[in-house]
Length: 297
Image (cartoon, rainbow, N blue to C red; front, side, top):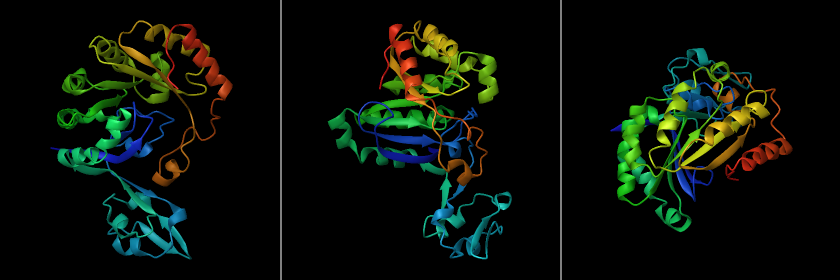
């Protein structure tokens, strides 16, 4: 069985307890304006071009069958409209100015990559986290991988937006030790406006998941002009307070994604947004704590 991933990140410390290996899956049903991994949104491969690494050698020009790369007057011009994301230019680029986001991987290869750091998991209480994109779009691959990791005694976490059919959860619940659950907004209209989809599936699935007896860590991206106001935070508090098996809430303050959008050709809709201040984040944390909800720093 094979799956489609963006990357495997080793020694991760923000994707669940302890030191972890995080597998980022390709494809997502949502289109969050602030997405910090735009290369993971589509299910198709994406070529990233990092101009600062380009030495103008022209190897990509020779390798590309579609003439998507041009070296003119010392400048590298990448014509994305001609690119089919075949990856031949990436293989030819020695300085690493071109990257291919998206590769097929089989379950055994993914398992072996995770097992390489098993000593670190044992020492730190860590394990493996399946993230994305949205890993549960590839639930059967996730199920098989989680079963294998469970047999190896590795702690397993799934980071999900919940915007999938409940059947995907049914595939992985018996083989998952904890969920990291992304919650964006309780207002469906705003959710549709900023994320391009209804929040009903995510909310319904979270309510259902909370009754399954598995620890759930809620993760809330704090986005100015979207969900950082007191009314929105209050709605989160009211909702989360009625759920079972919630270990705590992690706030993820908005920050800019550097050159990711420019390098991958996606439009950065949040480039002029000012990140929330420390005092704003502290105020939101206090609201949760005063209502008996644990904030995990």
